[in-house]
Length: 212
Image (tube, rainbow, N blue to C red):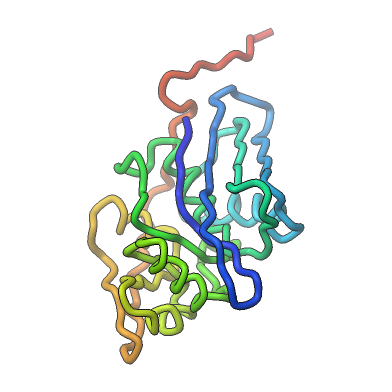
């Protein structure tokens, strides 16, 4: 199944909107195979390990399947760790963990720590400016970047500390309030429940591996 989210790439004081496309093949493998394409730099390629560990420690087990992530447009170089959060959301969405089929009005940036936290990234201000210019009405950013991004009017900025905060927000529509530039970021409550087993195969796929 394919799932798409929006993020951004920063170049100095400029930013470009990037579509993060996540495809999970549904073919069971001996181990999960995680590939990122679309001119990623080393930090972006290393995101597979951060994303896998962060989701596991948030209670989501990724089935051992082929996962391909495309950062579009492919002719723009992608740098930094800010794509971790949209990648993780795309994986959860591809396996049916998000209620919405697509999220076209919200942009996501954030580096993931191995324990499931969301760390700050550089370039929140130019990303917010570009989001406003592209008429993207909402931004989900690390708590550390919230005040910087909120300086740009016309975009609602939601501070988060964990992918769990974002998943709950997207599925329920509440749990996080947007902030103003002169306000303290809202501190969402991290919710940890029983480990959630993602569906072993996206809808409409089968396990092609035969038993010996």
